[in-house]
Image (cartoon, rainbow, N blue to C red; front, side, top):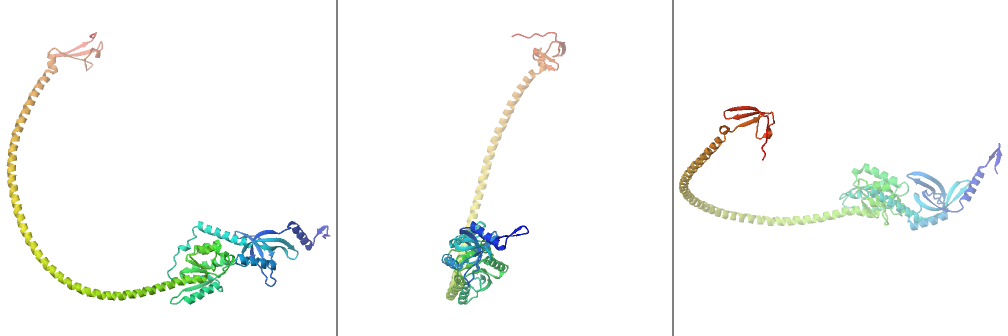
Length: 465
């Protein structure tokens, strides 16, 4: 019961704790399902109990955190379900769908009691995250960027990201040492966690380190041993997949599982199911190249042997060809000289014939030219006589017409017209051709054959037709 101290009602700590417990028991009367990330399992092997730390994050920011309890019997049952369905034990960094109830103890405070966990939800969440990562990388156009890089014919320097104590890396080294005969393939280990909450950041840090040393390596290999889907959740992380897809060196993976590929495997240049297969893939390149080189060496020796035989045949045929060629050349030289002499003789004869023909043609042309010139001269004389007669007749005809026109012009001369009794009348400097062109009172100037008259119009009358 509360005490009264200085007129104040005072509660003890246990009373407050009991009140909180009763309030929570009244409010949360049944179990409910909760979605949260198990940040750390906190399993105690001696007792078998677990005290997981549950968190909720958003954009890397912690929104809520709460302690929980998972009793040994429930842990063993749930863990068996995870091993059967998820192929991975219950562990850190997993998003879970849990059936819980609220408990409050005065000594331990508020916590959640985990009764059951749905492993199928964990698988579904991993698949959703995987698809979101794939879609984002495809939208950015970098999904196949690393695949477009060219792996050297014989990659001899490999940077390996793995755990030094992992079985996958041990299998890789075992195969490399057993099969690496007649050639050398150098590799350097960059240790990193490959699962759990710190795996993504550690792998990215190792990639950044290798990027700074990229001139010393031909490619990068990420090697991991076996494990379930949840253990591979880190390889579906967007930031890690982006780092692999945009890495400047080819990235090959062998992370030890035969189920659905992770996003990191999809964006890598080459993916092998297991580290052993990855080692075989690298060594096959060298062994195939070595076998081809041996085949080419054998073929080259055969070609050299055949070439020697062919050279002997060639020397024999060359000698025969030289002998036959000399004979043919001498024979052809004699025939050419005889042909040349015949051509010269025929050419001289032909030139003489053509020269005589040209002389005859020249004489004939001169004779025909003289006759043609004489004939054309006589024709020109006749044409000249006709032209003189035509010109004389044309001039006489034109002279007669000019005389007639001169007489006509003389008859029409105004002076001769005035002599016949006609006159010319002007009014205000203009020729009067009609009574309508003058007004009464106007001054007139009349030109006669022997003088001019100046008169004033007192009256005018028009002729009526």
